[in-house]
Amino acid sequence: MTMFFDSHIHTEFSADSEMKAQDALREAERQGLGLVFTEHLDYDYPAAGREEFIFDPAAYWAAYEPLRAGGKLSLGVEMGMMASAREKNAAFLQRVPFDFVLASIHFLDVKDLYYPETFEGREKAEMYHEYFTVMRDEIYAHPFINTLAHIDYIARNSTFDNPEISYGEFSDEIDAVLRALIETDTAIEINTRRLGTPRGIKELAPIYRRYRELGGRYVTIGSDAHVPDGVGRNYHRARELACAFDLQIVAFRERKMQTCE
Image (tube, rainbow, N blue to C red; front, side, top):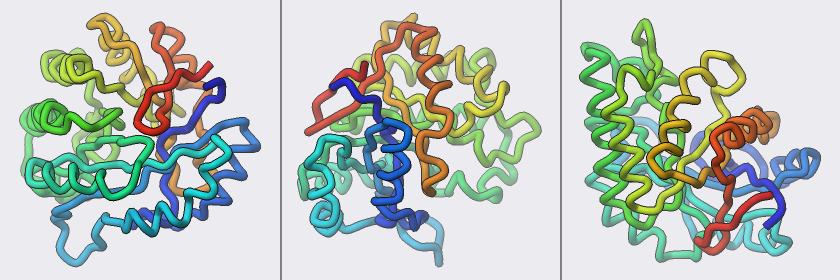
């Protein structure tokens, strides 16, 4: 594989996106990128009255498989990892031949990390320790995943004065996650969402440096785009980050890792 791929894209099959596949592909073509669609799957979604993050894999495959034929698009899923969903997650993957499984932690104690109320009454040190502990445990409990998405997801909507997952503050917890990835042959994502600011790069760089020090080698790059303007955003910064720490950028096809060069 010679093309670089944006391996984290949400189209209208995701409950929180209305992006059309052709619009995403058109923007990727303009940038010379391939794409991996990774629609949201979050079983046991805890927020009452809010739309569930589940999609029909057969309909997804029927709609997009013809677009996949040229090799510039792969079809994946962004799978929310929770203890209660382990068996359902495994069963979901048997329904169509997904190219790629991106795994995420979106909830803690069945509370959605997207919403400010999830952080109310919590201490940062305690909550972030729980976040990384759950992440480590679910990596081991989901041996069928390919990549861990946005290790810094909790910082996006955190209401703490300092929302960052600073490596110096949580080094033991982060090391445990990184070792779990390495031991299970799971890649880590360089998510480009927060690479547009010096602070985002400053906080994430030590994590990827440490991943390499521990023996990690492989990264996917994902914009987490939900609209066409987000496709490929800050991709060049992610490539620079990977190069700085001698990390190999990869993508997946038929669940097999392929290098991007």
